[in-house]
Image (cartoon, rainbow, N blue to C red; front, side, top):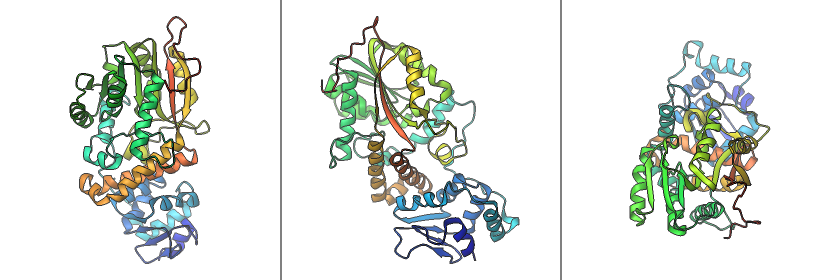
Length: 410
């Protein structure tokens, strides 16, 4: 039996229960969550790819199940560490399934395998398609009616997710100083949430661009249904191919993570070229803390299953890149607690409609999202991940056009 090996991995008294197909079990009887290792294939995956990737593959494939509170189950990582196993434990697991059965299993079909050079237009489009072009109805289930896939801004403890997303858009519009008739470029416009808010409440003329075909297919009818087709244009277009500047303001919300370190300077230079002198740019993006060394994590769960080629930057390097391009950074705000709360709201949506989610995207894809959303919430809560709104202006002969003490109320 695997009882002894199980205790070596998670300890004799873990905070959650762990059960193995041979009857081995550790953890309290009234545990808030139970992790069930259903079959030997789970061990094959873990031995073949020790660490996060092997465990992730086993869960996505259904070789491991999580029953109960997924947040409590993920807290086991705090007990086990980074999920890497000692050689003696790996050897014991290998003996359990037999050395002859150690040939790696094919990864789940949900795992991304991109081709070509990183951050070319074609590969970026494939990476975006992997993440976004799965099911608009699934995203509606997960995100709620606003279809807003970025950090909300909460003002009160009882704010709903919809209120908080509306407040986020309003905050960005005010930081950008939008006025009726202003041309706004929304880079990575998603399903049109920012464009709709800016046009409806601030009278902006908006160009929204996305490289996700499914997003564009839904954003356009949302614009038509809102009666704003005369103010909003949604394009299936890479930001590098935009030629009809200048714009009075640019928003980039939840898109920056896809740019990549190698393209960081090019990205800033493109935004600088597209905004008029005196115009403002707001970059809303996830970042890593300064003590976390940059890494691509090509073998990790997030890169293989969630954001292929995604890269996070330390906020200081982002500010430096903006200012090196000619922008003047005027305001910086970290919203990580807000994103933790946003992610918990998405997780609650997913748990409440789990069977419907599985019907829309399949069990494996739904499992990817369950693991991703809950794990990300915990990362933001702990400070392992951050998110910043960085407001910059392209000065006009030294004039920023910024109010002396902005409160974003005007």
